[in-house]
Every structure is written in C-alpha cells, then in structure tokens.
Image (tube, rainbow, N blue to C red; front, side, top):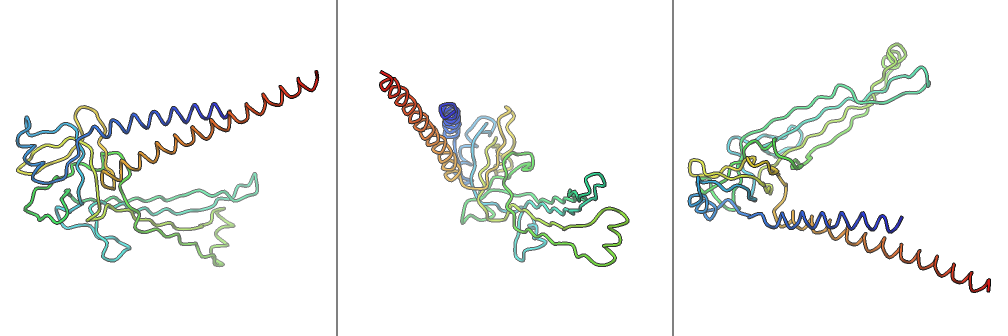
Length: 255
C-alpha cells in the first residue's frame, strides 16, 4: 500500500510539474505603457493568451459593504441561509437542513491598474469576470445568529414539527485596491486594454493575488507531492526490508 501511495503521489507530482511548465510559458504583463505599445504593434491589436496582474479599480461608483464600514468593492455576494430542524416521527429525532436560502449578487465594471497610476493612464478592463473560473472573492463578513426559543415557538414546534435553529449571514467581495491576476485574451479597445475569455477555449482564470505568489503556491503544491512520494516510498522500502529480514532470519534458524 505504501508503494501504491508513492506511485499515486509521484503521478500527482508529475502532473503538477507539467501544469507549472505551462503556466510559466504564459507571458505576464502589467497594465502599463509597455502593454499598450505591444497591443498597438500586434496583429488586430490582440494578444491571444496572457496574464495581466494589477490592482482592482472601479470604473464607476464602487459597491459598499452592507456589514463592514468603509469597505468597498466591485463584486459583491451576500448569502442569507436559514437553518431549521424537522421532527422525524419514524426515528424520533430532529433532522437539520438549510432552508430559505437567499443570495444577492451585485457588480460594477472594473479595471486593472498599476500601483500609483492615475485614471488617465493605461488600464485593462476586466470583461465578464463572473464567467471566469477561480475563487477570487474575499469573505468580509460572517455571522451565525442562534434562534431564540420562547413559549410561542415551543408551541409552534409541537404543532408543525419544525423549529428554527439559526440564521447565517455572509458577505463576499472583490475589494477595490486588491491584487488580481487575470489569464485570458487581451484586446486594444478605445486606447485601453480589455481582458476577456479566450476564443480558443483556454481557461479564463481570475486569481486573487499577484502572479509570483500564484506560481509559488503551485510550486509548494508540487514540493508537497514530491515529499509525500519520497516519504511513502521510504516507508514501503523499510517495511519490505523488515519482511525480508524476518523471512531470512526464520530460514536461518530453521536450519
């Protein structure tokens, strides 16, 4: 089993290394004049698949957090989930499950800019970010409110076989000023850039960090699989050596 695990971990390590090689082959740019010049000189003002890293800046009035003061963003997701329990007459127990799930999504157009740049400087607008893969929202608020049990609620529980347990509220945002790296197709539009989903089918990916940190995270993952490969391989070799030693020792004693 140790050798089997070692083989599996080695396979995962090789796959992660292949992924890393492909990621490092992708050109990386910042939303600056160098990218603007490159787009102007490229055919049809288009770069098929690149990574653009920068700071998030709202093109319009940013969204305000409903729960956190002075917290602004360009994408916002608010979830409210009511948790309740239902009486199971067969098992004579209460079974819990979420109910009345409500989700609200808000967004404003936004762009990537370089640190210290101004509105008039070159920027790259992010097109249809919700169509991209990757989890790039930050949870800025989370609270679970326990239901209060009064005499009226106890009576209603006995009649309906249902009781409220808790109310869970959470808010996630892509905050103004946060780092974001977008992998996609970049086109020149009205003197500025626009990054969008590639037309060749490659992944439209949004990562809530800079490119260097993104690569380092993948390298740590590859190192982890490499370490597990070596560890399980050594365990398997040690167990096998112990079995062989015991078998040879028994044969010697029998003689």
